[in-house]
Amino acid sequence: MAPRQISTAQIRQECAVCHRNILRGEQPVVFLHGGERHIVCELCVPRAVHSGWIREGADAVQGRSLRPWGRRAGPSLRERLLRPRDEPELLVPEDGEGLLEGIDEPPFDYVEPPAPRTEMDPFEAPVVYRKDRAVRGIPTNAEMKMVRAIELFNQSSHARMIAGVARTLGAPLISVRPSAIEGSIVGIVVGWEISWYRFEVDLADEASGVREVGKGYVLDELEDAEREPNAVADELGVLHPALQSG
Image (cartoon, rainbow, N blue to C red; front, side, top):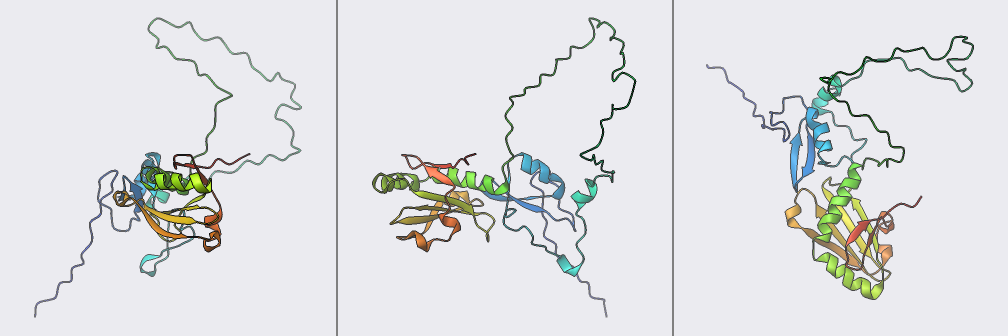
Protein backbone atom coordinates (compact mmCIF):
# COMPACT_ATOMS: atom_id res chain seq x y z
CA MET A 1 0.00 0.00 0.00
CA ALA A 2 1.53 3.27 -1.11
CA PRO A 3 1.86 5.96 1.57
CA ARG A 4 -0.52 8.88 1.29
CA GLN A 5 0.99 12.26 0.61
CA ILE A 6 -0.65 15.28 2.21
CA SER A 7 0.11 18.65 0.63
CA THR A 8 -0.89 21.97 2.10
CA ALA A 9 -1.83 24.78 -0.26
CA GLN A 10 -0.42 28.17 0.70
CA ILE A 11 -1.76 31.38 -0.77
CA ARG A 12 1.07 33.33 -2.37
CA GLN A 13 1.24 36.94 -1.21
CA GLU A 14 3.59 39.61 -2.53
CA CYS A 15 4.65 42.85 -0.87
CA ALA A 16 3.34 45.83 -2.84
CA VAL A 17 6.48 47.86 -2.00
CA CYS A 18 9.48 45.55 -2.45
CA HIS A 19 7.59 42.92 -4.51
CA ARG A 20 9.04 39.96 -2.64
CA ASN A 21 7.00 36.99 -1.49
CA ILE A 22 5.66 37.12 2.05
CA LEU A 23 7.41 34.41 4.06
CA ARG A 24 5.57 31.97 6.28
CA GLY A 25 5.39 33.36 9.80
CA GLU A 26 5.48 37.02 8.72
CA GLN A 27 2.61 39.30 9.65
CA PRO A 28 1.91 41.55 6.64
CA VAL A 29 0.00 44.81 7.05
CA VAL A 30 -2.88 45.93 4.83
CA PHE A 31 -2.68 49.50 3.49
CA LEU A 32 -5.10 51.60 1.44
CA HIS A 33 -3.73 53.50 -1.54
CA GLY A 34 -5.18 54.52 -4.87
CA GLY A 35 -8.59 53.18 -3.91
CA GLU A 36 -7.30 49.63 -3.43
CA ARG A 37 -5.93 47.36 -0.71
CA HIS A 38 -2.22 46.54 -0.74
CA ILE A 39 -0.28 43.91 1.21
CA VAL A 40 2.95 45.28 2.73
CA CYS A 41 5.61 43.24 4.52
CA GLU A 42 6.78 44.26 7.98
CA LEU A 43 10.08 45.68 6.76
CA CYS A 44 8.40 47.98 4.22
CA VAL A 45 5.79 49.44 6.61
CA PRO A 46 7.87 52.62 7.27
CA ARG A 47 8.25 53.19 3.51
CA ALA A 48 4.51 52.82 2.97
CA VAL A 49 3.70 55.24 5.80
CA HIS A 50 6.28 57.75 4.51
CA SER A 51 4.66 57.56 1.06
CA GLY A 52 1.29 58.56 2.52
CA TRP A 53 -0.37 55.15 2.38
CA ILE A 54 -3.18 54.69 4.90
CA ARG A 55 -3.06 51.71 7.23
CA GLU A 56 -6.40 49.91 7.16
CA GLY A 57 -8.08 49.69 10.54
CA ALA A 58 -5.05 50.87 12.53
CA ASP A 59 -7.13 53.52 14.32
CA ALA A 60 -9.93 51.11 15.24
CA VAL A 61 -8.27 47.83 16.23
CA GLN A 62 -5.93 49.01 18.97
CA GLY A 63 -5.82 46.52 21.79
CA ARG A 64 -6.92 43.58 19.66
CA SER A 65 -4.50 40.68 19.83
CA LEU A 66 -4.53 37.80 17.38
CA ARG A 67 -2.59 34.67 18.27
CA PRO A 68 -2.45 32.23 15.33
CA TRP A 69 -2.55 28.49 16.05
CA GLY A 70 -2.71 29.12 19.79
CA ARG A 71 1.00 29.82 20.08
CA ARG A 72 2.35 32.56 22.29
CA ALA A 73 2.78 35.78 20.34
CA GLY A 74 6.43 36.79 20.11
CA PRO A 75 8.19 39.80 18.62
CA SER A 76 7.67 40.33 14.92
CA LEU A 77 10.45 40.19 12.34
CA ARG A 78 10.63 43.98 12.09
CA GLU A 79 10.70 44.36 15.90
CA ARG A 80 13.58 41.89 16.15
CA LEU A 81 15.60 43.70 13.48
CA LEU A 82 14.92 47.20 14.81
CA ARG A 83 15.18 46.36 18.51
CA PRO A 84 17.40 49.02 20.17
CA ARG A 85 20.29 48.12 22.40
CA ASP A 86 19.71 48.36 26.12
CA GLU A 87 21.28 51.61 27.26
CA PRO A 88 21.08 53.13 30.74
CA GLU A 89 18.84 56.14 31.09
CA LEU A 90 20.40 59.24 32.60
CA LEU A 91 18.14 61.03 35.06
CA VAL A 92 18.97 64.53 36.31
CA PRO A 93 17.39 65.57 39.65
CA GLU A 94 15.72 68.95 39.83
CA ASP A 95 18.11 70.18 42.57
CA GLY A 96 21.21 68.81 40.83
CA GLU A 97 24.26 71.00 40.42
CA GLY A 98 25.60 72.10 37.07
CA LEU A 99 28.52 70.29 35.51
CA LEU A 100 30.79 73.34 35.74
CA GLU A 101 30.07 74.24 39.37
CA GLY A 102 33.03 73.80 41.68
CA ILE A 103 35.59 73.59 38.85
CA ASP A 104 38.36 76.19 38.84
CA GLU A 105 39.41 75.55 35.27
CA PRO A 106 37.95 77.73 32.51
CA PRO A 107 34.90 76.17 30.86
CA PHE A 108 36.36 76.48 27.36
CA ASP A 109 39.66 75.28 25.99
CA TYR A 110 41.63 77.12 23.38
CA VAL A 111 41.26 75.50 19.98
CA GLU A 112 43.76 75.99 17.20
CA PRO A 113 42.26 77.72 14.15
CA PRO A 114 41.72 75.46 11.13
CA ALA A 115 44.21 75.37 8.31
CA PRO A 116 43.49 77.71 5.38
CA ARG A 117 41.26 76.20 2.73
CA THR A 118 42.89 75.34 -0.56
CA GLU A 119 41.29 75.89 -3.94
CA MET A 120 40.64 72.16 -4.36
CA ASP A 121 38.72 71.76 -1.10
CA PRO A 122 34.97 71.29 -1.66
CA PHE A 123 32.72 74.12 -0.60
CA GLU A 124 30.54 73.45 2.41
CA ALA A 125 27.41 75.54 2.72
CA PRO A 126 26.78 76.96 6.18
CA VAL A 127 23.92 75.55 8.20
CA VAL A 128 21.19 78.12 8.84
CA TYR A 129 18.98 77.63 11.88
CA ARG A 130 15.58 79.30 11.75
CA LYS A 131 13.93 79.95 15.07
CA ASP A 132 10.61 80.83 13.49
CA ARG A 133 10.38 77.52 11.64
CA ALA A 134 6.85 76.13 11.87
CA VAL A 135 6.58 72.70 13.47
CA ARG A 136 3.70 70.59 12.16
CA GLY A 137 2.43 67.47 13.85
CA ILE A 138 2.35 64.21 11.95
CA PRO A 139 -1.26 63.38 11.07
CA THR A 140 -2.68 60.25 12.62
CA ASN A 141 -4.01 57.37 10.57
CA ALA A 142 -7.61 58.39 11.36
CA GLU A 143 -6.93 61.96 10.21
CA MET A 144 -5.50 60.69 6.92
CA LYS A 145 -8.67 58.67 6.34
CA MET A 146 -10.85 61.70 7.11
CA VAL A 147 -8.92 63.95 4.74
CA ARG A 148 -9.15 61.44 1.90
CA ALA A 149 -12.88 60.89 2.51
CA ILE A 150 -13.49 64.66 2.40
CA GLU A 151 -11.60 64.90 -0.90
CA LEU A 152 -13.80 62.21 -2.45
CA PHE A 153 -16.97 63.81 -1.07
CA ASN A 154 -16.06 67.18 -2.58
CA GLN A 155 -15.68 65.52 -5.98
CA SER A 156 -19.19 64.05 -5.84
CA SER A 157 -22.59 65.58 -6.62
CA HIS A 158 -23.50 65.47 -2.93
CA ALA A 159 -21.54 68.68 -2.33
CA ARG A 160 -23.89 70.64 -4.57
CA MET A 161 -26.88 69.14 -2.78
CA ILE A 162 -25.47 70.23 0.59
CA ALA A 163 -24.93 73.76 -0.76
CA GLY A 164 -28.56 73.94 -1.94
CA VAL A 165 -29.98 72.85 1.42
CA ALA A 166 -27.62 75.16 3.31
CA ARG A 167 -28.98 78.18 1.43
CA THR A 168 -32.33 77.49 3.11
CA LEU A 169 -31.44 75.95 6.48
CA GLY A 170 -28.09 77.61 7.16
CA ALA A 171 -24.71 76.13 7.98
CA PRO A 172 -24.87 72.39 8.71
CA LEU A 173 -23.31 70.25 11.42
CA ILE A 174 -20.70 67.98 9.81
CA SER A 175 -19.05 64.94 11.37
CA VAL A 176 -16.44 62.84 9.56
CA ARG A 177 -15.27 59.71 11.37
CA PRO A 178 -13.71 56.37 10.38
CA SER A 179 -15.79 53.29 11.06
CA ALA A 180 -14.94 51.39 14.23
CA ILE A 181 -15.87 48.09 12.53
CA GLU A 182 -14.64 48.27 8.93
CA GLY A 183 -11.14 49.66 8.51
CA SER A 184 -11.66 51.14 5.04
CA ILE A 185 -15.04 52.80 5.66
CA VAL A 186 -15.38 56.47 6.62
CA GLY A 187 -18.77 57.90 7.62
CA ILE A 188 -19.85 61.47 6.90
CA VAL A 189 -22.89 62.99 8.61
CA VAL A 190 -24.33 66.34 7.48
CA GLY A 191 -27.20 67.62 9.58
CA TRP A 192 -29.45 70.55 10.42
CA GLU A 193 -32.08 70.99 13.11
CA ILE A 194 -34.81 69.42 10.96
CA SER A 195 -32.85 67.18 8.59
CA TRP A 196 -29.72 65.05 8.36
CA TYR A 197 -27.93 62.83 5.83
CA ARG A 198 -25.41 60.04 6.35
CA PHE A 199 -22.85 59.09 3.69
CA GLU A 200 -20.17 56.40 3.45
CA VAL A 201 -16.86 56.31 1.60
CA ASP A 202 -14.97 53.05 1.02
CA LEU A 203 -11.29 53.94 0.70
CA ALA A 204 -10.59 50.43 -0.60
CA ASP A 205 -13.08 50.92 -3.46
CA GLU A 206 -12.97 54.62 -4.32
CA ALA A 207 -14.38 53.93 -7.79
CA SER A 208 -17.76 53.14 -6.23
CA GLY A 209 -18.01 56.78 -5.11
CA VAL A 210 -19.77 58.30 -2.12
CA ARG A 211 -22.93 56.46 -1.06
CA GLU A 212 -25.91 57.91 0.80
CA VAL A 213 -26.79 55.29 3.41
CA GLY A 214 -29.32 57.09 5.58
CA LYS A 215 -31.29 60.23 6.34
CA GLY A 216 -33.69 61.55 8.93
CA TYR A 217 -35.34 64.58 10.42
CA VAL A 218 -34.21 64.74 14.07
CA LEU A 219 -30.60 65.07 15.21
CA ASP A 220 -31.38 62.97 18.29
CA GLU A 221 -31.58 59.97 15.94
CA LEU A 222 -27.80 60.21 15.49
CA GLU A 223 -25.19 58.74 17.78
CA ASP A 224 -23.41 61.03 20.23
CA ALA A 225 -20.15 60.97 18.26
CA GLU A 226 -21.99 61.86 15.06
CA ARG A 227 -23.31 65.03 16.69
CA GLU A 228 -19.79 66.28 17.45
CA PRO A 229 -18.74 68.43 14.45
CA ASN A 230 -15.18 68.23 13.19
CA ALA A 231 -15.60 69.72 9.70
CA VAL A 232 -17.28 72.71 8.03
CA ALA A 233 -18.82 73.44 4.62
CA ASP A 234 -18.46 76.58 2.53
CA GLU A 235 -21.11 78.21 0.33
CA LEU A 236 -20.38 75.72 -2.47
CA GLY A 237 -20.94 72.70 -0.23
CA VAL A 238 -17.23 71.85 -0.19
CA LEU A 239 -16.16 70.27 3.11
CA HIS A 240 -13.07 71.34 5.05
CA PRO A 241 -11.58 69.88 8.26
CA ALA A 242 -12.32 72.16 11.20
CA LEU A 243 -9.40 73.92 12.87
CA GLN A 244 -9.01 73.48 16.61
CA SER A 245 -8.86 76.79 18.46
CA GLY A 246 -6.07 77.32 20.93
